[in-house]
Length: 209
Image 1 (cartoon, rainbow, N blue to C red):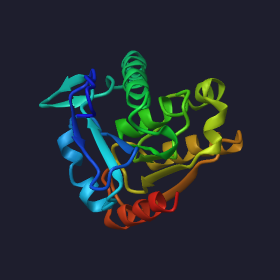
Image 2 (cartoon, rainbow, N blue to C red):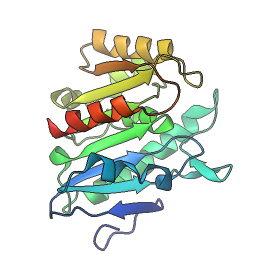
Image 3 (cartoon, helix red, strand yellow):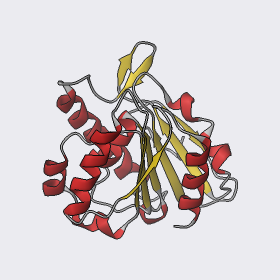
Image 4 (cartoon, rainbow, N blue to C red):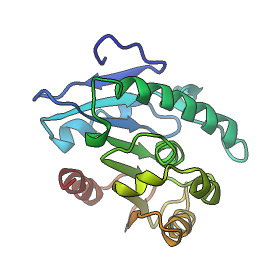
């Protein structure tokens, strides 16, 4: 747990080996938990990065979720955005530097990376959205913090994804790109998971920022 901070979501905090104010916040997918992504920090192998893995606010079949199933997503998305705003405000008040920090989300977590991250007042060093989608790309473009375009956005998706179809994510990213939202999009021959090649690319992408 970050120093003297009580956060409104249960979490796993993994401190950096080398003291720093860099932080990666990790958002899991539906039915998973923070524990499901404890493999990521040792894989990334960044001695100067702190990690905060959050449990989503809603219970879901032994795990957690950030919002309800379609077509009832919006209430949960708004609630999760509000909680994440509170958490980020606390984290970046003094202990960590937003401009050196990253937001990583998978599936539902990827949606929040866009729906929350693009609206949040502080600009992070980078945003990584894996195998997700955007709830409403047109509304996001209207409500986004225009300064996030000064940052780095990476979106990846599997061409064989049967949970969240590839063409949906691809078309939404195209909508953002056509409106001037600079997002790097990469596809992988995978289903609704994270592949080894993808992880290697993400690691290099983060280290290059």
